[in-house]
Figure 1: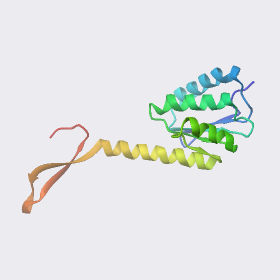
Figure 2: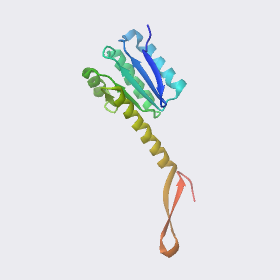
Figure 3: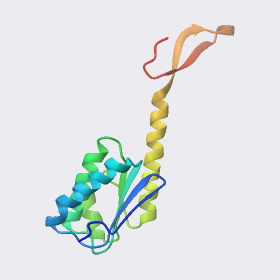
Length: 151
């Protein structure tokens, strides 16, 4: 049995599609396969796409585990699944994980999170620092330095 129906990388986002239900006996293998894919490809973000039949408790368990593991190192993630019961189950267990009814919305959410992370990284890299020295005509001088850089 194939664990994933489709794998796709587009715009450095790894999309994992599950169309068939997985049981508890496949849960560990799927979690390991997802970790291996993320390790190999190092995507900027990850989107799980669950078909109507794929939203089993085992699949949700893998998604929640994947989110906990990869969110710690800053890989944004979202889920697309039509069934309301599956969306509710994911949100009830992990409110911070974006869950959408369609793939385009989930991809947009992850792209926004990736852009947000990039903006935060740039803001940390260059921070305006008021030095307290006076410039011409009594103005205060503001320098832009890399984070942690001393004058």
